[in-house]
Image (cartoon, rainbow, N blue to C red):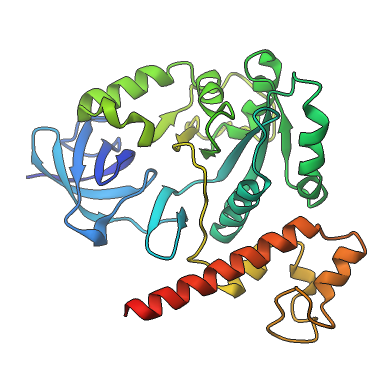
Length: 324
């Protein structure tokens, strides 16, 4: 049986769909294969480059996962859930209505920072003037820290979609967000044939019933002529979007306290300057982070998020120690 490399393009639990990478002898380019893993050591994530062995017509088994550039995932004290790998940026899709969760936004940004992925915030439904000021207010800490925020109305303002294009072309971006934020609408606006790609994946896996829990990789259409510095004109890769299921929680129990400290970019200049080396940035005397909150240079909401994540990390460590 033939061995070859393939890109993991859809994940339904432990059921995978992979696409043969072009330029390999005796392998039909872009052919889709149902792929299985040999065990937990080969659990894939959408975006993975796989070394697989053919086991039958359009069937293969994972032999190896090529070393990842990064992996975006979430976790609680008991298990973890991969979202995507080998991505350049995360598009965090929010909306003015229904109201978004600042906690989930903060967690997605921390997950991106820890994985070395660029966070880009999409504020959708900006055509609702009564809702826009409150949404902008919640995003002020992120704007102050320099995170890019794109105000859009995907349904009613095609120009806002066009303005986003240079920032996704030539890159692999993963879409994350709560249900109801307009994530699917944005996907279809950027990739008009997304529904056709979805249908092809589902037909291959005979898994239409799993579509709401699937992560999928979609190819962006070729870029129009552009002089934008952000458009990769010398690269034939048009870009891709990885769509993830809507979520209502984003656990980061796998992150250590040190990883958390460094993932909050506004904390970095202050690390090591608190009176106590294990400062929780709560009520301890000599806490420079709390002093920065009092001075208005660090958001109190962000410090509370750190303290919550720190608590979850310690709690997960305690639970894991008891399970051993």
